[in-house]
Length: 482
Image (cartoon, rainbow, N blue to C red; front, top):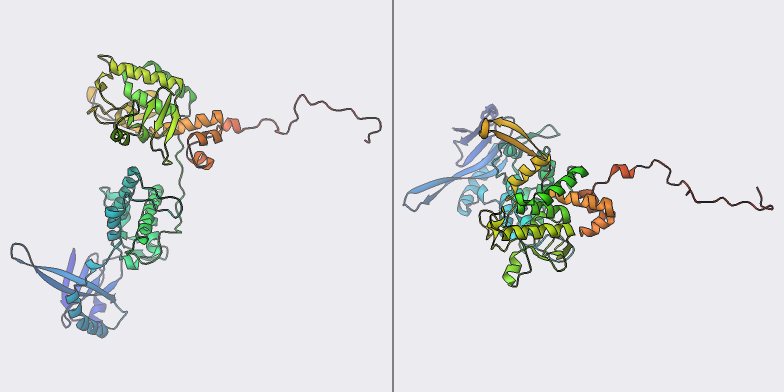
């Protein structure tokens, strides 16, 4: 709510105005267009603005008047007479040029420009070849920028975090919203304050900062960049993050799951095959969504799918893996048997997989077999299966009988099957072999994100320098010195 009044601007009258919990606007009776804004508490700011109206004719012929304003200076920076003289001289010019606050380019405009024209283009890299962003990465950037920079989110707690007034270390208050800041006045301090707002969500804060940095780098490569200057997101300290390296720690549970998928595959053939495939070869989840049973002859189908099986060589061919290269993944004998069982169940009548007969996809969508599964297709099936295996817990909310409603908590998801594979593969064949198997650029990536050492194997009960048992001491010759 705003309060607007008209008074005669003098030093005494302006000093008497007190700050309240509402924004106050006072217009000068002796100078056309001069206005002073009294910001609400806890701010103690008073600012001069030029204020005027613009008339326009709507489509129905009626006249519409809309307000325009232009910031001049803080109260006290210039004498009142100087401010009045400036407004009297400049106001006719401002009205002609229609120079208003709305014409100022803001960070919001830069981000929207990137979302419209830059999203999905080439990766912002200083070295290496040109590589386009994958759709998943582009969607993730769009989500980060809209939620954490533009503050377009349904979560009220996040909105308050990004737009509320905060107290800085120098005992001053900061109320600026990042998206509303003029692009030509943005500083590294503004970016850092925005990043500090998200202290309670460190991982999201770091990702949002990286996404905003990409926007500035993209803008700097244009012929006519909107932002003049170096990237203000650079050299801002990030929050420490805890890497999610969770996996199925109990080997007994791993063998239990393997046995269940072998013996009970008929209960839910497609889901259990999908689950076991992730455990057996450890590739990314999205690379399995659009798999085909064999290499398609049609080039259009080849572009549409993510890969196919080759049962002559017992391999899985993936067109575009994380390192942007094709990969041929070896399948285990056990996995081949499970895939053959799935084919038999699809071809047989009255089975839990017969609904997929005729579909070209290995894992078709239950609601429409002509389409492949998506990220959410097996969400409920995973929850129920993990609850059966003790990897999901639930608590009672309400209801009774068949109408009981539970709240489920998944302790592991499908992405943790990749980490499970890498951990047990690495423990058996070594970290270097696991890194090569996953096609990582370095063992450090494998160790920091996927592999968990067996702490018992790292312990040493005896000295590593203890001589071997078969070493025989040589007798000294008679003339050898003691």
